[in-house]
Image 1 (cartoon, helix red, strand yellow):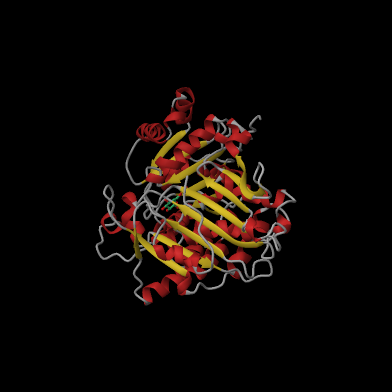
Image 2 (image 1 turned 60 degrees about the vertical axis):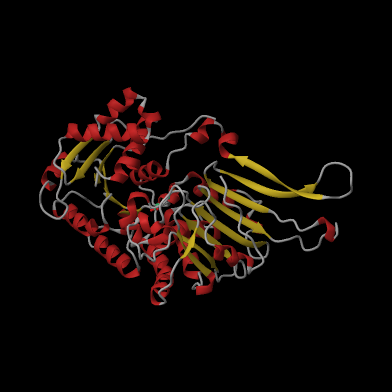
Length: 484
Ligand code: BG6
C-alpha cells in the first residue's frame, strides 16, 4: 500500500510555551515527522514563543535535543532534521505584558496561514488572545489551538470560552483532545459508518452493554501538583473517555463535517443521565515494593483525589435506553491498554441446548497498544464429540493487515496540528461540547466533595479496587481483563 501524504499549505505556527514539556515531548517531534514525511511544506515555519530569553540558535538546539530525546528513530534522519531546524525561530514574549509582541509581529509573514498554539496554563489563554488582537497579529483566518485542562468545572470552562470568544470566532478555536487524533479513534467512525455490518445491530436491542477502558501503568509522575487538583475524573473522564463514549454512541451524522459530527456528539452528552453515587467507584493507588503510593507521589499525605474511576452510565435516548455503558480508567494498573468492547446480547434461543453454554459476540476495538479490532464469534469446536461450541476471535491487527503504513501513522498531535493548518475542526471539541461535558461531571465531583468521599485504595498492578469489580458483578456482568 502506498501512503498518501498531502502537503498542507504554507504556514507560520507560533507555539506559546514553546520551551515547555508538551512542546518538547509531542509538538516539536511531531512537526519534525510531518516535515520529514513531506507534509509540512518547506515554506512552513515554526516560531517558539516563551518567557525565556534565548536566541533562535539556542532554541534550535533545544528543538534538536527534544527530537533526539523523544523520537530518536526519526532523529537519525539528520539531513531532514537540519533542514527542519532552519524552519524554526524563536522570540521571547511576555504573555501578560507588552514585551516581545512587536518582534513577533515582525517575524510573521503576510499571506500565510497563521496558527497560534497555546501550550501554556489556561490562566494565560485570555491574555494571549487579547494581545494577538491588540498587536494585530491575528486576522479572521488565523487559528488558535488550546489544550486541556479546559477549565476545571462548568463555570471556569464558560469563563475560558467567553475570554476566547471576545477575540476569536468559534470557527477559529481548536480545542485539542488528543484522543480524537488517535488513529483507531477515527477508525471507530470508519467501522461504524463505513460498513453495513455493524450499524443495524448498534442499539439496545442487540447490544447488552459497552465497556470503555483506558488503563495506564504509569503513576502521576512529575505532574503531582496538577493531578492532585484534578483527579482521574477531570483528567481523563470529562474529556478522553467522554469523547470515546460519544463516538460509540452517536447517531450517524449526515456527513463527515465538523459541525455535523459535533452536533451528534453533543446530543449524546446531553442525553447522559446523572450518575447515581452507587454507580461510581473511585480509587487511589497504594505503594508497591518498587513504587510509591499516590499520596507519596503527589506529596500530599491527606489527599482524597482519585487516580482511578469506574462508573456505570446510561444514555436516555431511543437507541440506547436500557444499555449500560461502563467506563473505567486509572493509573498504576495491570497493563497499559485502551479498549472499547461492544458486548452483544445472547442469542434469543439456543438450539444446541443448555449444555452448549452461553456465548456472546464481543467486538473489541483496541486503541493502544496493538491497534486493531477483534470480533469474538461462536463456532463448533473442531473434532468429534457432538456439537460443542467455542468462542474464537476474528482478529485484525491493523499493523498486520495494513503493513508498514499502519506503523507509520502519525501520532495524535501531529495529525491534529495538520488539521489546524488545513482548517478542519472535525476532530476538535466545540465550546458547547466542553461545557456540556462539565455540566455532566460537575455534580459527580461536587457530590464527592460534599460527602467527603474517600477513594478506595488499590494495589499497583491490579485492575483497580474490588468495588469496581462489584459494580459489574451486581449487574451480572464482568469487566474484560486488562491486558496488553
Ligand atoms: C493526558 C492525561 O491527557 O492523557 C494524562 O493528562 C494521561 O494523565 C494521558 O496519562 C494519556 O494519554 P495516552 O495517549 O498516553 O493514552
